[in-house]
Structures are given as C-alpha cells and as structure tokens.
Length: 136
Image (cartoon, rainbow, N blue to C red):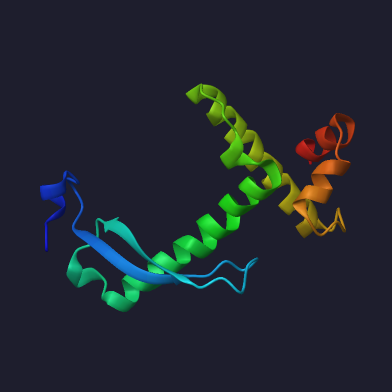
C-alpha cells in the first residue's frame, strides 16, 4: 500500500523507502540468514535520486555511522548496555566516548601509538597520559 510521508506524520519528507536485505551473523556462520525490511525516510524528491542512488546512500550510512562509529562505541564502551536514565548524563557520556575515539584516531594518524585496537589503547590510558594528548 503506497502512502505519502504526510499521511504517516512525517512532515517535510518526500519519500518513505523500504529496503529488503538478508542479514547474516558473522559470528554464527552456520545460522540461516534472516530476511529483514528496513524503512527509511528522505527529504529528497524522487527525481533527485534514483533507486541505485538511494541504495548507495543507505549503504554509506550503515558502513560509516552504524558499522563504524556506533559499532566501536558499543563494542568498546558498551554503549547499548548503558542504562543512564538522565538525558544530560547520556549526552555527556556520548561526548566522552566520541572524544576518546577522536583522540585515539588522531594518535594513530600521527604515529603516536602502534596499538591496533581502541580497546587496548583505552586500557593503557591514565589521566596523566591522556591529558597531554588533548593539548596537542
């Protein structure tokens, strides 16, 4: 059934997109892949991006945001398991996590660390080792 974004309360959106995908658990290769449907909204008009362009934008989102930063924040810092109920506290914790990832990446790019994982790098840091990194 086709609906407009306005009909489902998404004012300002031009498209609602459904993408069918197979999802495989990489840590459980013998499990059967599951079929999922992901729903996305876009403020792009249909004429601005064809189906291939929309698919590429969704893949970029998942590879950059969800599988990149979000995965690192969750695996290294257990972000999804964090039960901070206060919105301000949650925002502060997210800022600290982002800061930590950013400093680690800067150190890697500068050649300041040879550690190949964020988790290992974090375990080596103390206040006295981390503070000078923020001043660089």
